[in-house]
Amino acid sequence: MDALLSLLHQEMPGGLRLLEEMVNMDSPSSEKSLVDLLVRFIGSRFEDIGGTIEYISDQQFGDHLRVRFTGKKPGILLLGHTDTVFPAREAQRRPFRFADGKATGPGVFDMKAGILLMWLALRALTQCKGMPENSVSVLLTSCEEAGSVTSRDLVEAEASLAKAVLVLEPSLPGGVLKTARKGVGRFTIKSIGRAAHAGVDPERGINAIEEIARQVLALRSLSHPEKGTTVTVGTIQGGTRSNVVPAEAAAEVDVRVSSLEEAERITTALRTLQPELAGAKLEISGSINRPPMERTAQTARMFGLAQAIGREIGLELREGSTGGGSDGNFTAALGIPTLDGLGPVGGGAHALDEFVEVASIPQRAALIARLIQRL
Image 1 (cartoon, rainbow, N blue to C red):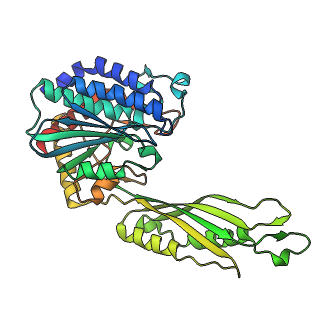
Image 2 (cartoon, one colour; image 1 turned 45 degrees about the vertical axis):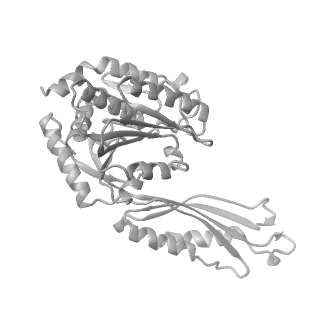
């Protein structure tokens, strides 16, 4: 067995204890105080293995964590997040559990086990004096699940100092790495009509809900699934009472695109929508907040290296794409080689049956360590 992989197998009991401690600390995006507690706990663990830690204050969300390991040249950035989609006290209801080879608990797959992989890989490299001359940094943001509202600039600034980015988000089913992700957009379309009595003088009114209904039909024609583009109306709100012609209504729209060209097409189409009812008005807000992570020649080379390393340690890797976004979308859009989905093997992200296959952890950590050495 590879010496590094053997070391990582020996470290698994302590690794599982660390994972348990992280999972049992709630960290919902909206609860700054809880996320801050987790961030400082994780920071102390990285400091224990030689990292220089920095807590980057955030007034709206939890503080972000940056960890640097010595190196004089541009190197590797390990990217992830500490926040989860689950509410406070979820860990009390469903604490960490290890049974039948699986670890379960809120956030275990997305992405506290990914943080564990970073820690295990870097700890192993420091123990065996295998850290590269190039710098290695870890950036864990606290609002990824909320759309990276306050952390995008930080992610892009940190990535600009690196020559490659490894994203420890969960893998696709079976451990498949992500070499492409769709871009994500959120738009709101608000229609403004005129209220009137629905029984006495409805003709004086302009029905804002009807206007929104017409826009929904128009939006449907913008989707091009064959190009990886979907436009989905997720919610509609409007009206005040059943006997009042509604004066206002709004639709929230989810957009997913596989290319910058499609992102521009959809943005233009949404921004130039026109009302269909006489006298109605439209107000449109929103944007593509995560650019698509397109598969490039650089990405393909990084995946090829990962695949070769995988074979050395008994891991057969495949690549795939996903409709979900991550902070890797931002780094890839800057032209920085980015490989995503390097987190654990498991499933059920954002669901109550979320799990990680514990046997996969040493191999995935060894993969990360070797990528850090060879990139």
